[in-house]
Each structure stands twice: as structure tokens, then as C-alpha cells.
Image: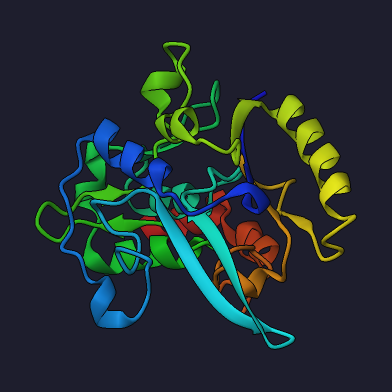
Length: 245
């Protein structure tokens, strides 16, 4: 059974320790600060090749009161990753899934994808995660700190979280923890829900409507004209064969 994150947004204070720890572990370069130019404390404005993790800020009015929702965005490491299935149509093996951990990994072979092929890969992701380095052509995203996991260590982001908003472990254990925590949170936040717990290995506990966190916080949105399930059903070997023909 794969490893799984549980991210409890009710405990997230937007300290951004997870975001910094991710950059430090992966030795990713800094981005130019832009927060005062676009009216948000969120920085950078979006995921990019130098940020595999981003704490998103969402400010909205709730019965006349200002509400802040924080969302530590990252790859969900889908059980059936559409990015891998789409990538395999063009360059099989460029995107891998570690069956032991559940980590979905972009390899150096992703530089072989053309811009149009990358667009197809990004469009296939219901969470809008994949990014491309325009200088190198490499695709990038969260790796689940797969190298750390294989050495018995926690992912860097989980290790530094000071509030317990991020937990990590065996999938069965995380699902039990998620259901227990959800029952507790629902007493004060009746809208609380788990985001796509059956499909992903990064499960978010939301206490507000998903759209009050991030446009892609859940996969309920369609992938183009199709639902996620309908899209996945099209990713069959016959279609792959037609693409290669």
C-alpha cells in the first residue's frame, strides 16, 4: 500500500515552512518577490519549476467577515496518474510511478516532450500541477521526497510543519486519521470534507467550500468537456497505439 499525506487545512497558519523546506531540500533557486505588486501575501503567484510546493492564500467575505483559507498546494500523486498515462502516449517511461511509495516522478527524459505534448500533460491533470522549465525543457513538480522516504525519513515539508497540519504515513493509517479528524472538525465546520480521498495520495481536509481555497483544490471540475473518470477511461492502449501510428 502506498504512502499518503494528510493535509489538515484547519491547522495551517500559512507559516510557509513547508514551502521553504521543499525548496531547501531540492536546492531550488529563489524567485523574485512579487507580493506587493499583485495584492496578496501569497508568494510566488503560482507553482513554477522552482516551487514544487506553494501555500495559497484565499481571502473572501463570509457574512460580512473576512475569512482566510490557506492551501499548501502540491502534486496529489494520483493512484491512477493521468499525467503519466498521457506522457506514455508520447514518450513511455519519462514519467514513472514508484509502486512502493506511490510517488509519481518526472524523470530527465521529460525534456523530450514538445511544448504541445507538455500542454496535453498539464491539461490532463485535474489539479493543474505540472510545470515546465523553459530553459531546460524538464517537467517538474513535487517528488513526495521519494529519496527521503526510501531512507526512512519524512518528506521535508512534513518534517518542519509546526502545527501538525501535515501528516505522512501508510495509506490505511492516514485514511483512518483523516476520517477521525473529519468527524471532529465537522462539529464546528459542517462543510468540512476530504478532497478526493479515493483517488489521490495527498488528501486534504477542507473546512470550507473547495472554491474558497483554490480553483483546483478538488477534481470535481471537468478535464475539458469530460469528468476526470471519463478522461481516465480514454487512456487505453488502443489510443496509445493510434498516437504512435
